[in-house]
Each structure stands twice: as C-alpha cells, then as structure tokens.
Length: 455
Image (cartoon, rainbow, N blue to C red; front, side, top):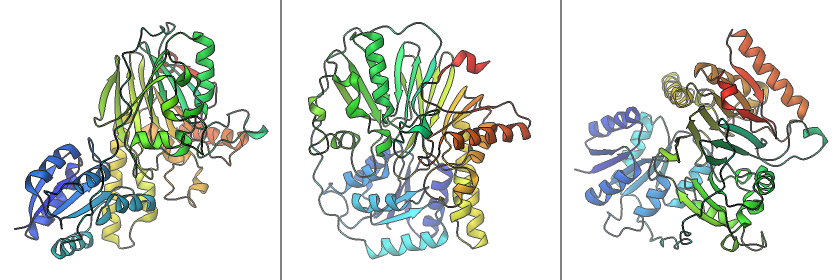
C-alpha cells in the first residue's frame, strides 16, 4: 500500500483530503507543521507528500528543497505544494523549489484525481540540490543599550506607501516613503518592515540618542522590495555600538538572509552587508508566537504572493496588529472561484473560514495597521494582486472589534486628496453601521500612544 504524508496546520482541510485519499486506498499520515512533517518523511518515506506552502516551522518550499537533498527518500516520491492564494509567482517558486505539482486550496475532487494519477505514475526523480552556504557568525552579546524614554507604548509611522516610493508635491500630506513603522513598548524598540521610511527613522534615532548603543528588533513581513529597500540606508546599522536583530520568514525562492543581503551586492550597492559596522543578526522564524523582551509577538500568514506574514504585538498598553499586504479571501475567491456551483460554494466556505481566522487574530486590537490599497471600484481590476480595498478592511476591523484602524500601504498612484477621500469613505461606512471604530489614513510622522487609542 502506498503512503501519503499530509502537512498542514489547517486540521479541517487536512482531514478532508486524508479521508478522500484513504477512500482511494492510500495509507495516510499527518503533521500540523513542517518540522514534524520532515521527521515523518524521513521515517516513513511516503510516495506522496502534500505540504501547505505556509506550513509553520518549515514551509512547503523549505521542506521541498530539503527533501530533494535526502538520498534515503524514495527517489520517485511526488511532492505537491498546496496554497490558499494561487498566485502565479507562487507556482513558479514551488516548481523552482522542486515540487512536482502545485494545487490551490480548497482541494477539490478533480485535484484529488490528479494527485492519485500523479502518484501512481511515480513522478520524476529529484536532482540533488546543494546545501546553502553558512551564514554570518552571530555577533558578541550586546552592550547595555540606551534606555528608551518612559511613556506608554506608541506607534510612529515612517513609511506608509506601497509598491514604490512616490515623492512629490501631491504626496506631502501622507508621505511617499514605503512601509516602515516604529513601535516603542515596554522598553523595546521594534521596527515593522524596512521600506524607505527606515532611513528617516535611522536619522531620527541618531539625533535622539547621540550615538549611545541601541538594541533594536526589525520584523520583516516579507521580502518584496518595498519592504526591505531601506535597509542599506539605515543609519543605525552603521554604528558599531548598535545591535540589530532581524526576524522574518523564509521567502519563496531564497532564504531571508539571501533576500536581504543580495540587494547590497555589487553592482547594486557600494557597501556589502558583511561590511556594515553594526552588530546584525538575521534569524528565520519558525514559531508563530515568541517574545521580544516582555512584548508577546504572534504571527499569521497573509493572502499575498509569496510568503507574507502579519504581526500582532501584545504590549502592556494594548495590542498592535500589522497587516501590511493582504487580500481578503472571500473577495478574492468570489472573483476567481470556479463557475460550477458546487465548487464555488466550497471555495466560498473555505474563504469565509480563512477570513474568520484573520478576524480572530486581530480581535480587540487597540491599533490595526492594514493594507487598504484600493477603493472598491479599483479592486475590480486588481483581483489577485494581493491587496485589499477599504470596504473589506473596514468590515474586517468592525467584525474584529478593533478600536482604531489606520489605512496603510497607499497606492503609488493615489495623491493626498484621494487618500483623504478613502479615509472619509471608511468613516462614513462605519457611521452607516452605527459602530465606534476610528478610521484614519496612516501618514508619515504620525505618532499614536496606545493609552490614548484604548480610550
């Protein structure tokens, strides 16, 4: 009897596929994270492996690349990457990682038939892939860092734009720098993303602390360029007294270190990453929950091309949720679902469940910073681009009982007046629902204290 290994933290989706494979005569073993799946694959040597692209602790692309290097596995085993999104770039990334097939969830009966046919055929042998080179050694322990000024947890926006910087007279009010948000909470300096706004933050920190040692944590949501392009210009990384810890998940085609450092290679940049004087560590996340000092950090994968994660920071003054790039599943599946009624219904049920998980993740947040790139009319021609519209974001925030919503990741084609109209529409939508949610458009320089946000 052939064996199938299913790796997915979504128990409902995993059990549904397991039931259909058992009916077809396969033995099925299951894992809810990638590390456990790796152990089971090495032990049981299954003929079919189906792994969610965003499986925690070792995503589907990481696992695929690793298993292809293992000579002890069945050389003709079939590896399938499953995804909730279905973006073209993700399919390409899966195939480049060595996958034999790529499926979009929910997995329907026709997909199961393809899996069975593929596994019976035996797939293709996997070529050997060399292990990645060893990274930079960890720096020595950080010296005593400068103490942050006392005060309630706060959020400050340094970059609010999406896709690319848009300087000029039409973007002065809200700003033209790409994503970067500073959080100070419980003695910790936490930075959300490293877009071009990171340059202004670095200059401000240098002026405020006058060269005193700083200990900072940078959380990367994903490695699309508008979220990392400020790193080479971050003044704090050039101070040898500073310690910068960079955390994020591995991307679709390269590790986090490779994605961050390659933009600083010649001929793109004159200073290589290894030459930066600051003590910098890069760590790829596996756990979905961890601590930065006393601040609890929770993560959730978002619906965006590639591997993109949202963060929730639980501080002493309340919760901050950061969803920089996200396309609501229900709206996306409604536009892209199959025309057959049964399949469409299953797609929409799955989408509702995924959006409900996101609402639970941000529930009760004092501050929600969310991708709201389009208005409703614009979204109709941008389905599948991985971004949300104001109507859906406001509805999600109301459902999740968020206190204060900041529209974020402004479209590069939107001038200040357009963004103001979108914020006004969001407030009118809330008023029509007779809710109390505060809606604002994020703008550079705006600082928000959580105590004020929670009132």
